[in-house]
Image (cartoon, rainbow, N blue to C red; front, side, top):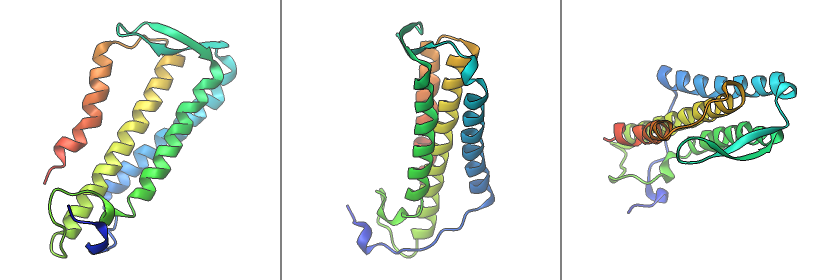
Length: 158
């Protein structure tokens, strides 16, 4: 549609809601890392790593695989935080002009922040559930995950 090169480049300051969203995401990364550091030595050598459609574990792996999820959380946090500095290169359904740039950029950045927080909270919950609560995942849990990931894309329409 329109390239990022002809769009205005303006700095969008974080509002109080944005700070809260960032705090939630960062806090869950820290909690996630602390929980794994504290409880890692108490976990069994083999843990569930994959679940079938009915929510029952059908794959097992070393407990060191638990370190991947917080690693992915940190990676996602960093990449999406960096992406928030470049809203002029995002895809938009409307032409970005000097008149609408601030509103469109603010909405897009907030959507990125909300998605980041949701994904990090979900990763922390999945890791916590599998390792500490020993619950099985069901189809309803998969539906909840998909609904929460898609919610920002539906609710942040202009």
